[in-house]
Length: 264
Image (tube, rainbow, N blue to C red; front, side, top):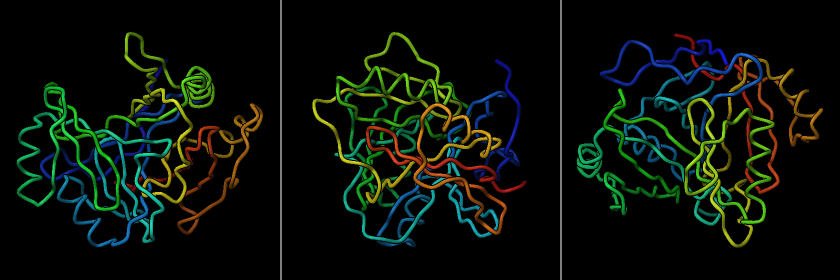
């Protein structure tokens, strides 16, 4: 399937002049867009994410923190819980050199936990977002977004995989411990658990966001396949961005966006 370049972004310090989200598949696909967090202290959260390696950028009224493959968006509020215990247990980044990143984070006051695998660490934000760090020595970026880890009841993992394949053009990956699918910019890991997890809405990871080229057409296609929207497509950000919201059967609140990225 052919890919085409879109959405050039402001880059991380030390990187080339502009970075970009992963390219959207040309016909019907999506790319990973953002994580929307509910935080008690917006300034403290901004400091965490910039110390973690992100760069603050703006798209008109939207304030974003940029990493390769992802934006972080912050909203002040009292989260009802952390990510653990919800349908998105944690999210993951990949580091080119985990030890170097951990040393940098520790110097900035970010606490890390050693995982079981080589180069694997965990970080938990003050508001309860669980972040897994894996190492990929071959990647070009010092740090980039890598995956969303869903907790899905064992009886539903096949249905959940089929739903993301059908609606978001996810590509199944074989030979993995869990059902694992790829979209541009992210891996979707569908881990099986015994019981249904809590919905994400209202928790510190309130929702995940996917970017599409033509939101109105994309939404019509999803509705034709039986997907119901919590909020139909509408314009925001002084009309420069379109958004729509839906919730999957397993409790993950999802935003679809068009025009999210700042112009270079």
